[in-house]
Image 1 (cartoon, rainbow, N blue to C red):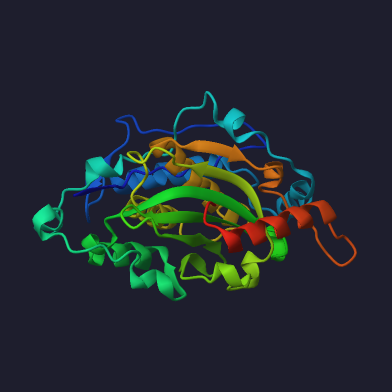
Image 2: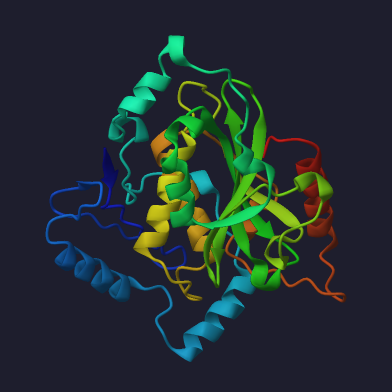
Length: 314
């Protein structure tokens, strides 16, 4: 089995010029546990490129500028923003990178396949995993998770959270029993986390980072033969963390993480993009207080929160 290790997670410059970066030999896919040749020099080149084209630099003035700018910034259409630009995030299709173990091959034999029990017990109680722990959990017993497919991924802004936190949530379906669950993932100051077993029907949230969800973008995978395997998404989450593990306010923050994961999955697996009414507010700070109520946004977020409690589409 081989894993992508040359996943170049460039930070896209939406306010200045668009740039791209590739190695002279194209994307490199290393075996599990391996490293690309001349990894140190490639990493140095990526770091140099990031410093050269960094969006806001490192001065205090630029930090203040960023805060003010994001109060008024409106994003362009997702489809328009990505049309015509070379792909800068490389990921081999998951089906091409996985060689089945003897145990998995035996499990796929119809004569030996046990009755499907629906979603694994893992999804029935709340738990937080680091992205690395989440991937390791799925790989510990591949047969338990082999029927789980990703139906949709949605990019969310938590309207009532500090600094307008953004994250992704995705619908996972057992392809045999058709049972569904919703999982959230995102970057916080303490790390990158995957949240499973969340009681969405209650309307409660695990922390203030997820209060009052405003949908921004959704990618829906409608073709049953092309839906991503849950492990494919877990690889992307883990690789994104590994490439840029630290929360950085001016660069690799929560909305950068959400955008990177959604874009990689869309580029590799296709899917239908839905831009919600308030999608232009991605990347933006939205000030919401007892005096600045943002009634229209709040109404939309409350409606979406009720939708999440009632059904499993997004």
